[in-house]
Image (cartoon, rainbow, N blue to C red; front, side, top):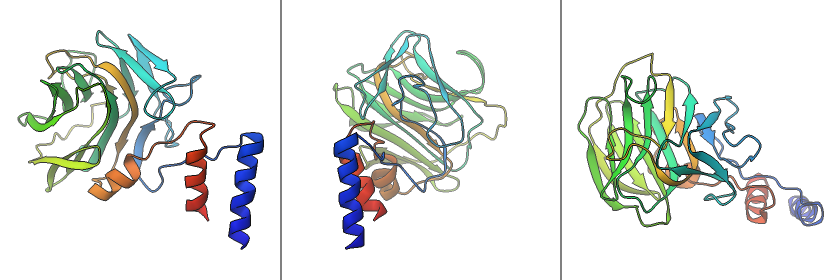
Length: 246
């Protein structure tokens, strides 16, 4: 009864005063988690690590991302840069994308500006299908076409000794051997870019970009990584959070 009364009280606060407890993706060791929900600081890292992203070139914040805000990329030079040395052996990269462009870059780790050495861990589209490449290994493709103008979540899980596993919308769509680099000088990640693509820069909208220092399971990808952090004012996330907390 006590918990039930607390739930009712919390819902009353939401409805009366607009108080919102955001749904949080907990228990994942994020290096960064960019929700793009803060218009004043769109690249803010919600993981508390302070690895904020910077919108560069033709990248602009928009209000209608997958969940709350998002970032519109122009296909010319727009991207989001996170300056951080991310782990290379056991990790999960994830991002929500919406595009109808079939041959564009999505994600990569690199040492310096475009054309510099050390490019690694690529996501890109070729004929609409998702391709991946890590370090000196060959690019490999899935059979999933995501260039349909709808939202899709793409995740790549890499496990040292366990290969790569790709997920689209929480469903496993492919596996491959993992050829990883062993650098300590790749100091940045570009979201919305891969020079493995026919067109380096992404043309569309991105949201929920994350890098996690663990090789997540399929259930973790679906139940935790894909869970949106709702923007202020959305009751659904509040109700979900309250149920989880009590």
